[in-house]
Image (cartoon, rainbow, N blue to C red; front, top):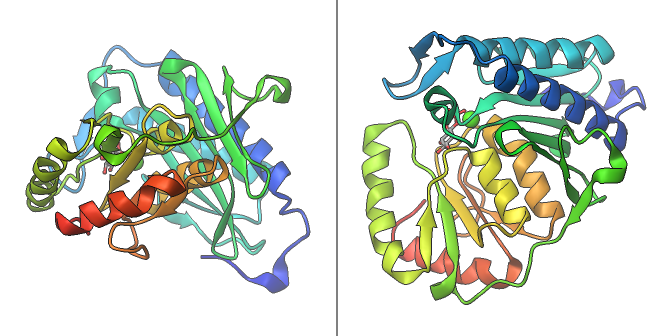
Length: 281
Ligand code: IPD
Ligand code: CA
């Protein structure tokens, strides 16, 4: 993933990477939200329900240009443009989801986001998630905590530190999840949900993984799990949740790529055991 320690140029300071991530994510969020065209060109990707619009592509172009104009030696991997710019030599790789929650965006349903994360030596060190329909931005850098700010998040004085609250017992936990675009995997996920629903307070399916992770960080849900995600869905939000005090793992003890389970450390083991019992992987 473009991690050649010998070529680090010394400028991979997490605070500076976060500042750039925030500016890139919020500029793209502003583009998709405020310049939403009257007519969206809606196409499909991995399945008929996996959507892409001209605004996903325009937002990703803007993020790539913003990142590479300031840091031309970095690599960029994005949901729409793939690895075309993954040739950098600096050791920094950016992971970009230009619109996480494209289905919400297509339906003009609140709750989509631009997610931008910086990775060094395989570890996410900075991440920003811009949430234009709620007019707020989340950010975190490794070891320095997570925050949420009104608007574009560029004014550091408006950033409120996030600390996840003590969780309720599992049977009173509000749990977020999401579903794959693959119908067979959805059927499996539906079976897990059917078993989980009577064992917790309630479930939420909001439609943007990056925001689900930020919602755990902000205490707006008690936990979030999903499988079949891509790294660009997760990278920034997982750092934000972890820096807010959540345990970030995956069902059945962790380590499954694209699977995530995020909750307060006092809740995560019990929820993991239940999800594992129900067959979530
Ligand atoms: C999707 C959203 C959704 C999640 C899917 C993702 P996209 O991303 O995050 O909430 O359930 O697994 O693929 O396609 O809107 O960028
Ligand atoms: Ca996504």
